[in-house]
Amino acid sequence: MEKWRNTHRLLRQSTKSLFDRRSHPNFQNSIHRSDSRFTHNFGRTCKPFRPYLEHQKWNPKTCFRPLRDHLEYPKTSMGACIGKSGKIQCRFFGSVATKTQRHPSFSSLNADDISYFKEILGEKNVIQDEERLSTANTDWMRKYKGSSKLLLQPRRADEVSQILKYCDSRCLAVVPQGGNTGLVGGSVPVFDEVIINTGSMNNIISFDKVNGILVCEAGCILENLASFLDNQGFIMPLDLGAKGSCQIGGNVSTNAGGLRFVHYGSLHGNVLGLEAVLANGTVLDMLGTLRKDNTGYDLKHLFIGSEGSLGIVTKVSILTPPKLSSVNIAFLACKDYLSCQNLLMEAKRKLGEVLSAFEFLDKESVDMVLNHLEGVRNPLPPSMHNFYVLIETTGSDESYDKEKLEAFLLRSMEGGLISDGVLAQDINQASAFWRIREGVAEALMKAGAVYKYDLSLPVEKMYNLVEEIRTRLGQSAEVVGYGHLGDGNLHLNISTPQYDDNILAQIEPFVYEWTSKHRGSISAEHGLGLMKANKIYYSKSAETVQVMASIKKLLDPNGILNPYKVLPHSLLSYN
Image (cartoon, rainbow, N blue to C red; front, top):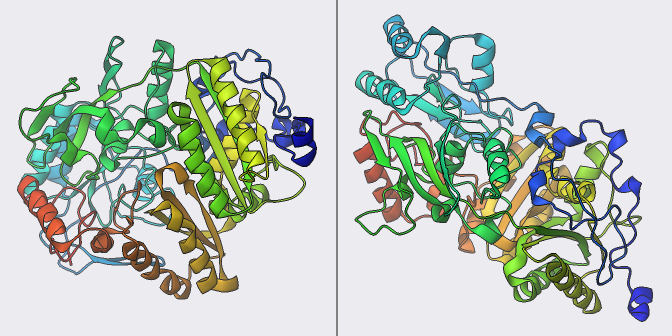
């Protein structure tokens, strides 16, 4: 062991400079991870790695708020339709290569419409305030902005039904909106669509502790559900950076992925049932709580990931796993991307059932965080490494899980897969490590304009795309690559001082063509929205897209639900 310690510097002593909370008073507002995930596995300081470290207790009652609150992103208010006009209306979204024409069949809002909505919802739930509408019309990246003049806040599914039935009869287009945390323009109006805010439908209906099945309304905020389950001894199978604002209905509608995907899988596997309202007001009760039900077509899967284009999800039944007592986190350095790949393969083999997260960041990602976020420190000073990996394990046996992780790290260091690393010893250090990984998006926003691409690719090919884009753009942009390596999900980000069509022309369609060539997906977890609706053919065959359009036509014949999103505009005659 002493020879190994002298040869390598795995998991060195970490000091208070790693993340000085006193220098960053908003630190608690910037943490994405639920405190309930970290228990008494961690001591008070990051100590050099060695077997059988003493555990120290941690009080799990401390509560953290999400990054979204710190960033002051737009909240969950919404907006709606503008007056009907005979003129052709178009929308251009900055440097986004999206030109969209308002569909002429859609009606425009009038005084009678507003009176009807006030009658069924009450005056306070029919919002026409300009400030709230401005927030609702704009996505959190400030990239997409609609011109809606109305915000509706139904409190029950029957109110959603009445709204949609009326809008369908009037051919008033609508946009379902939850926390408005999307990244592809799917949750804001393109023109004057009526926005339906699900935030008032935020009740937990039931929880079955024997089977771990939660039934709740669509407007429940993800973090609130996590807190409720924590008190019951369970956790949500979904964990996102925006959990303090995003709502479970929106999570389901976009099939959100997140940080626990490698351990718990997708919402297609965890959602047991849902209730959804169709465009004509029909309420589909598919709110089952059975893990096995082979009676006909499993229609709930049509609504998971359909981004509100087939119906509005109003209730969800979801399977939640029990909260495990042992969580360990390591922040590691690798000399190259091949080492990251090999480390992943070894982690799957050696850590197996306890591996709950495997995230990677390139040097540029960490640089971005260190340069733009206050109070964040390099966990592995003084030098920077080419790549970093964050590994989390979750299990039920503290001593066994820790010993297993430590043995894995020791072998990986001796085998040359790890250049350096540190093992978190308390909740503050664990949160600091996650802050680096999850702070990349915030840092990019602070750095200037950003072109974001969320791609699924074979793991061995993922970083090749980053390198090729970096070569194509040269000094004109900063190219950052990071993401969920355990899921084969790359977050490719191109940072520039401002949006520039010349730079965009170098990125698109190259990124989509490259992804398609390597049989990847142009949307791993963010959805298609407006940004990628016309790009769907890079990932899906024409025949498949045609079937999708047929389903859309069947369930929403007038096309009022979230128009211009998900499917190609030409296919649905939106141009």
